Amino acid sequence: MKELLAEGVSCREVARRLGSDVEVVLRYRRVDRGPDWSPGRPTATALDPFAAVIAEWVASGNRTITDVYRALMGEGYTGGYDAVRRYRIRLIGSSDRPRRRDASTRPPGRKAPSARRLSFRVVNPKEDRHSARVLKHLRERNAAVHAAVGAAEELMAMVRRRQATTLVDWAAKVVALGDPDLRNLAGSLLTDAAAVRAAMTEPRSNGQVEGQGGRRKGIKRQMFGRAGMKLLRARVRHKG
Image 1 (spheres, rainbow, N blue to C red):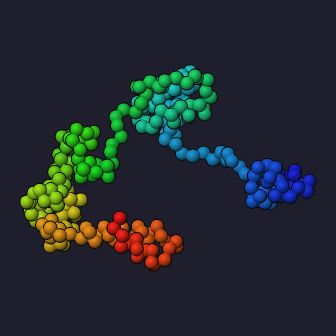
Image 2 (image 1 turned 30 degrees about the vertical axis):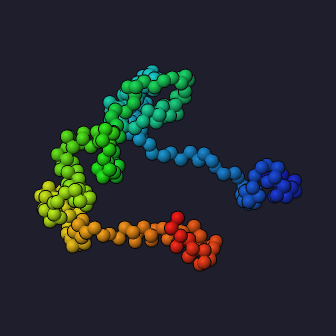
Image 3 (image 1 turned 135 degrees about the vertical axis):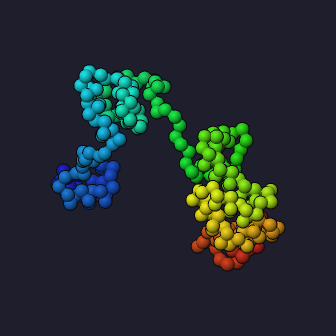
């Protein structure tokens, strides 16, 4: 860019010849050097605490990434195999041919499911599925989880009108469990117990009102800036 500009070529022509943007040419024209795409600033990695172990392993003549990974797992490393491979390549380079990874190099066990994913499995259980097996496994191994899931299932049965337990009785059971989250939920429900009890027992609800409101908002978003009130009114009144 500098050479072409020094020859008197216009910025637009330089951008056309080099396949760049004219704004890039204008920006680089005002600086003395190109951007540093590889500044080399070191960043912290999960392998930094094990740098001495890796250096000692390499100095002793070992080169196999699988053995290094197994040794680090014995020292408490919980990261991935590929991170170890990249770290070792930066130290001594790579002359190994790609090969299938040994099953023993994979981190043991599965990643624990998040609370959000578990809540979906509680609210919408599916028989003979992986989610049902996960819940069963957790409930068998942890008494607190078993009690919390049981309380949640009882509350859902009350909301779906399949169980005659009263809200006060359910709240008393939850408080006796000692779980702080469930205790806070029970307290918030009891602060507006009349409305909660009506929602569980009355045949009427505001679901139709909420549904029509959401439908109207969707139509307004689709038509914003594109049509007038006449078409908007027709679409809102149309049931299709």
